[in-house]
Image (cartoon, rainbow, N blue to C red; front, side):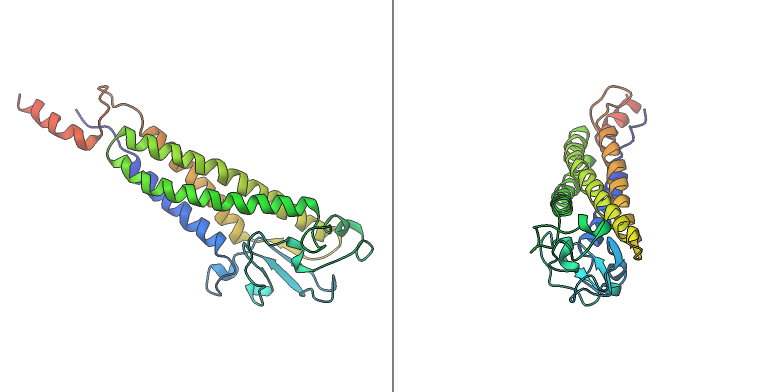
Length: 239
């Protein structure tokens, strides 16, 4: 009798791809080489918003940068989005930009953008941690159902955190882009950052399903993996 299919190798391959894409997002702005140079969440025209504002601003994971991720600010955890224009007071801006400013980030960022991006930033890192743990535990899937169960549990936890992170990130920067559009300023979402984020989510989602599939029993009801079924199969053939 043929042994059951073990999805652990395919799940590990997808999990590896998910991790690579997640690292691209987190390391955006840290290098001028492709693809990190092209990876940013939003590019917007910020000229004239304040004396210190760049003509073009690109928001990355740790930094606020200029065009092509150059002239970046120092790396800082969960940097305020309003660092792109600095401290503003009510009356300095009007229209849609009134929703951008607030008491956070030295008077540059409103409650909405401060907390949405801060939570998204933290959830990205938590998801990364559990994905790394899932990658190492995924090798247990080669042993059998128990290994797939452990890997499936850890990857499910990673999936939950990554789902929240990517959703919050999307909501934050789509709304920020719309605010710039409402003021007739050019703004565009970063194709690479969004593509890597949602691509990482998709790969992790499929990998989690595959690990869960590996928990099923084989057709003969045996809980063992294909590898450990081989000796019994040979014995039966010569019985």
